[in-house]
Amino acid sequence: MVAEVMRSDDWLLLCRTVRFGDTDAAGVVHFARLLEWCHQAYEESLERFGVAAATVFPTLAAQPDVALPIVHCSADFRRPLVCGDPLAIALEPKRLDPGCFEVSYRFSSGEQEVARALTRHLAIDAATRERCPLSEPINRWLEASSLGSGIQPL
Amino acid sequence: MVAEVMRSDDWLLLCRTVRFGDTDAAGVVHFARLLEWCHQAYEESLERFGVAAATVFPTLAAQPDVALPIVHCSADFRRPLVCGDPLAIALEPKRLDPGCFEVSYRFSSGEQEVARALTRHLAIDAATRERCPLSEPINRWLEASSLGSGIQPL
Amino acid sequence: MVAEVMRSDDWLLLCRTVRFGDTDAAGVVHFARLLEWCHQAYEESLERFGVAAATVFPTLAAQPDVALPIVHCSADFRRPLVCGDPLAIALEPKRLDPGCFEVSYRFSSGEQEVARALTRHLAIDAATRERCPLSEPINRWLEASSLGSGIQPL
Amino acid sequence: MVAEVMRSDDWLLLCRTVRFGDTDAAGVVHFARLLEWCHQAYEESLERFGVAAATVFPTLAAQPDVALPIVHCSADFRRPLVCGDPLAIALEPKRLDPGCFEVSYRFSSGEQEVARALTRHLAIDAATRERCPLSEPINRWLEASSLGSGIQPL
Image 1 (cartoon, chains in turn cyan, orange, green, blue):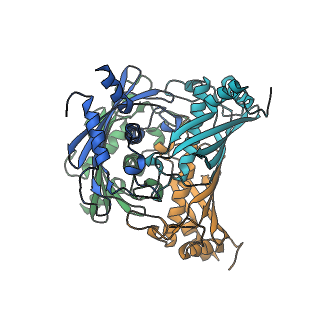
Image 2 (cartoon, helix red, strand yellow):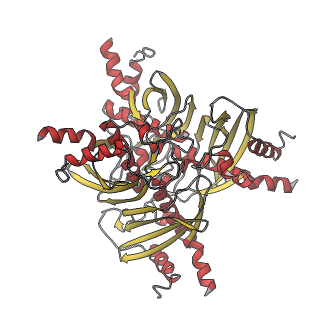
Image 3 (cartoon, chains in turn yellow, blue, green, brown):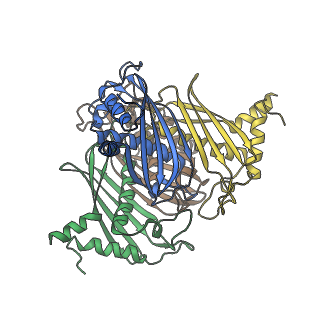
């Protein structure tokens, strides 16, 4: 029980620190940065789970068969964040259908929730850009991620 | 009639071009860039309407009494955009209450709508960070912007 | 004479305005933004000269035969810039050898020089990543750009 | 001997991973990102050494007496970097005079050096913007950093 929760935490609870370049002249984090942090957290989550970046994201050398463009995103900002603030980011990935998933992100600093965000990703064939099923590694990550929450047992 | 529409276009229909640094290794615009374009379009709209940046945004020298942090944003991505694509951005600002407004953004390239987005801004006292009324310049911009749409006559 | 100078200005003297997202919590432009502005100015210069983005920069659909990675850049910051500041950017492109060129950038605001920067670009075969000659459109832009300066007549 | 090297490594040898948002449509890291990584590495180095962000960088709540604007930066790019590449960043801070210091950065991935960069920082009085001496925490960091190199013994 405890072990399962711990294992889940390995790839679904990430940390970062607010850096100076994340702020704007109001002295707080510029809103659009939060969305960049979401994508970086999603990438780090996959990496920690064991999915190599090159199997999901195109590089100079190779393009995966399936692309996962974001078709929707949103964010809610609860409290201002300043340079040096430590952040914990809790991810909740969720498959919506065989070719689509969402990731919810809760950002907290200390004991306080500071922001929430969401990204929705669509699987498309990288060559034709037609909708297609999610790849096997993404499906494994989605299934394992739903285990820890106790909401969607297999 | 026509004149009014034209005048409205001056500050509510903006243009930009997709640049190389806006793209990612998938060959298309990175999703978070759209939110940055929204804020830049909002700033350019105010500037064209005649509201000086320094009356709304803090700088080294001075901080306006009222800050306008974004408390919510969202975006929907309809079509991929590549480097060099010309964009038209139609803004629709709307006051929600005396201390809050939203801006809707429709992005099109050629004849096609490519994305939509929304930012919601809350007026707060820059010193106390308590909610307060919108400043006079922002109110004028909101009122003038609603005239062209024929929905909210004064 | 005057006409030639004017023509040259069309693609070698560009304008932009400092936006809020360009600043950091010190209330001034974040240093790394200047380098992004350089690349955007270089792209806009090519576009104004008549070189389509797709002939130089890769997109989803196509990759030019020759890539032009930046192998060196530098910047000097003379004065702080704040949100709303208007900028003029004077470009001076210069071929160093048949497979390499530099662009110098002088940023001024009002009457004052505020920053200088430089990017050096190397031509490589996009497939093999071996050095190769510059493409014809880039060569035409480099030659036309040197005419106005009176330093390198044809 | 070994212990000293290890201790030095704590704040002068940092790690990060290339993320998708760092790349552009050429499939590799966009050049300007390297400069952002430099500043983030400099911030992380200070933090690991024990200098709180708020003593060096302005926030909503407070502004340190001494600001440290970057007056010069440069970068050399040796090899392309793609999404997922692990990076090691070796910092070499160096005081140039009582009111100025530089940080050199060597980026390597695996066994290969991939880039070098440099930032030069000037101490100024945050209120008057006149040159002034470096603050005590920055001086301690500069002195401790030079110990490991064997070049500038106290």
